[in-house]
Length: 412
Image 1 (cartoon, rainbow, N blue to C red):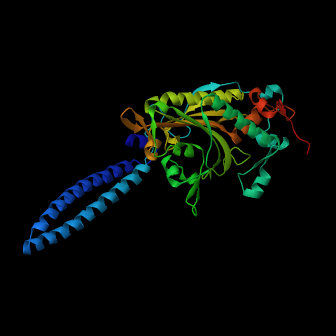
Image 2 (image 1 turned 135 degrees about the vertical axis):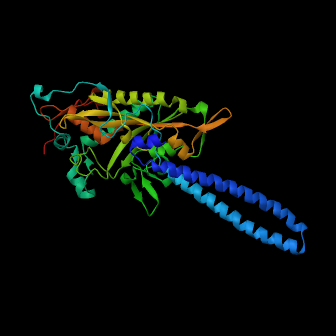
Image 3 (image 1 turned 30 degrees about the horizontal axis):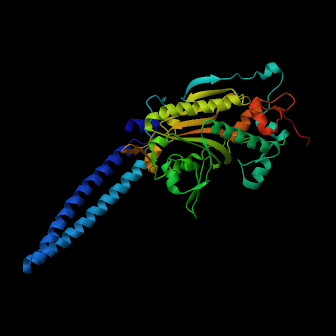
């Protein structure tokens, strides 16, 4: 656990503090049991005693009662401290994860061919210029109404989102996922149990008057769906595809990706989520990655797959693979989808277990983004733009856009 914390760049001392608190909990629990046993034995003697002996026993009983209460309070305090410290510790990092920070990832695979716009004879436009010409994106009015990093999708932009969502849900359903429309507001335990109130808490919106959190991903309500339940082993794997709005403060990212809709405070997303036996988690992780690759390939986007480094994992993931699409005007690959193996981490915190014969044990949870809508629109517009400002629609998406092959600029 210390090594895992160190690899994440997180506090290592919290592990020793946890061990100390747990030792206090154990010792005070033993002390409590001993005192309670002595108290019960004394209680049997008092009715048989008389005179000075009884007075002495009653005095001792009062002292024991106070000691029992103190030991009980001490074990409860130590247990609460241990629980809070445990919640500060991230999942154990998979041994094969590359060590380092955000830029220390390892490229596992590169898929597709990047277009050579120079050879085609024109300079590519960025997604915002294209989106405005298409009558698809309005960030000025988004800022007027809600502030920076908000936007409207209008006309063909709104139709493009609906097409992407329907296509993503269709792929997920064909792969055996149950479609889900999930709550966007959750109780603190759901957010805490999934690991989003630690290092990620700065990006979370909280409604203090109601004690609710706005979710940054449907992973949260999908993980909490079976909270405090025991799932029969023969029901596994359970796979859900959730569609929801997502809300992120993006704290600490000001100055980054402020143009357009790449990094915004509110967006819609289709998320895959799996419950499996722990021994099947790595194989399920590979499957989730393949479904993400299938999706991006169907959209005819060039992308690379990376093995994310320890310092960029997030608290709940033991290992995370990202698919990064090529963004022509930025000249680099940017994250579009991500899939994480959380092993038993979330299940333990949310008390989700599986019954395998007579054995009841925690199961494993995994998540994978299939379509984060705004970023997918960014990649589609930039990679499929034509010299005249129109945008070619990938064949897989055409049935969901009324068969249209091109998105064309509107007359202003």
